[in-house]
Amino acid sequence: MTNQTLPPLASLRVIESSILGPAAITTSLADLGAEVIKVETPSGDYIREMTWPIIEGVSLMHYHLNRGKKSITLDLKTEAAREIYRELVRGADIVIEASRPGALARYGLGYEDLRSINPRIVFCTVSGYGMTGPYKDMPSHGIAYDTWSGVVKPAYDEEGFCYIPEHVGIGINAAPLFGGLAVLAGVIRARATGQGCFMELAQSDASAAFDWYRSESHMAYARPEDVVTGNKADNYVRRPVATAGMKEGVRYQLYASADGHVLFMASEQAFWKNFCAGVGRMDLFDRWPGSKYADHARGNRELQAILRDIFRTRTTREWLDFGVEFNTPIAPVNTPANIVDDPQFKERFHLLPHATHGADMLPFPVRFVDEAETMPDRAPTVGEHSEAVLRQVLGYDAAQVAALRQAGALG
Image 1 (tube, one colour):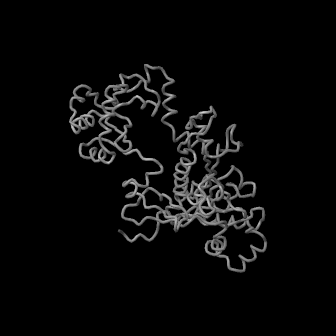
Image 2 (cartoon, helix red, strand yellow):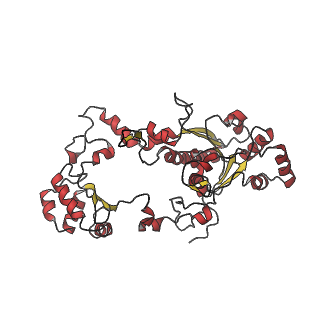
Image 3 (cartoon, helix red, strand yellow):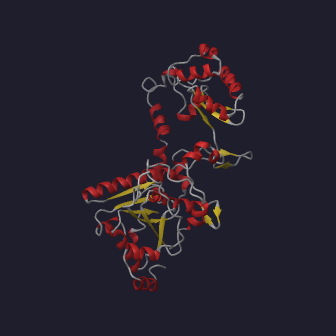
């Protein structure tokens, strides 16, 4: 282990004006050591009360999305507070406007205003549908971006009522990935050229971009069938798009084990041969050898029934050991509830514990080899760091802070 004194983004300062989920754009930056100063209204970001679970009065969403950040309250209706904001921006690299576009401009703190005092500032506005288009003024929440992008398929209950099915939220999780990458790219360029930039990010766009394989496959299939085909293993016949085309697979499919489920992935001929040899059933390979690559033995119910019976003879752990011994791709099928018990999860994730962080949380997933992991601080209470930011970041003395409080700048 090397003596690592500074986290990777220790030189980065971010001023964030956010409410709710879009605050996620800076979570990973804070995880990596950036100084993220969350500017809140005196009443605070009501994310602390949103959704569930609520842990000792505070939402898991707040604990996760705002961990590692500093909170300062500023009443931007006052000129004194706006001047503090400008002073913070003078020494910052990034400004995040994670609410409706133009919210800061209404206070004279938009990109054009701020770049006049810091030409290197990277300004990113994050919203539901972005700054343009017919949906730009529509109010929305996170799942809207998944229904818009086609990620969520409506479900119906036994009484015929339509409901939102369980699914992974894409828009609210993809936007921070694209946004974080983009703002860091902006900072690299700004440090090289002295010129910042103004960028905008729609969570709906991020959801669509993240699910590119399905939408692009549909676009491809809209072209003539003699131009866009299926793959060689399927005799070039088109399958349904993306994972929908996996339903009829056999050599690449889910199977019940003796105590759970496994994912079998012997679509390459070499892996399929290894499996058959390992279970002592070379007759299966001789009868159905398949083609060299991407052959799922689609629709072969006879083989699927045989494999169903074979997989029931061993536990999931035994099948995982088998996969290593006989070089056959087999994976466990976990749930969000039991993945924490998986030995691979335990090895890879050193959880941020609730004793220090309010909730048990997964840390930033990328490791810097031979460096100590960066540990973000607990998510802040409203205005928890107001005085510290003013004194340590801006250099105000106690009398100046007291005067600002008296003037109502801090709420």
